[in-house]
Amino acid sequence: MLCLWLSERLDHNLHPYQCTCLAHIVKLIFSDFTAYGLGHEQTGIQAYVVVSQRVEAEYQRLVRSGKLKE
View 1 (cartoon, rainbow, N blue to C red):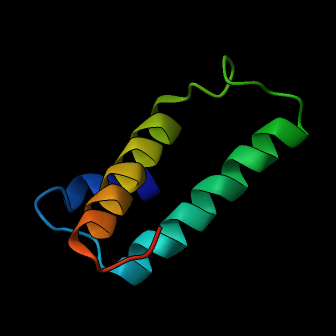
View 2: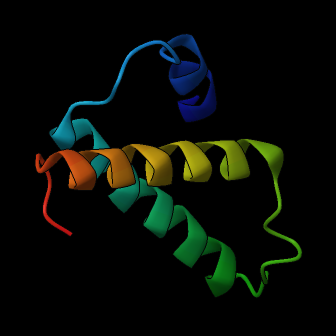
View 3: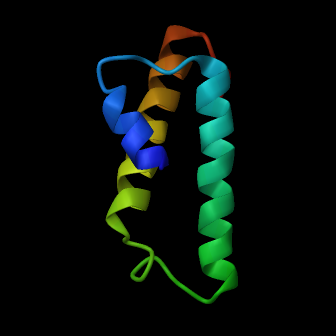
């Protein structure tokens, strides 16, 4: 669901609050993966990778623009 929503908004930047919330969700998803014993090799699910990369890119953009603190 997140992957689809982010795909539909490729031409829109995320608001700092959206980026913060999504970063938290991505971290929770990864912690759930590791809680079930899955490592980086098994968590290469395409949707997770796409969401994670987009959130990281948006986060870095917001940090560079001064709208979000690192």
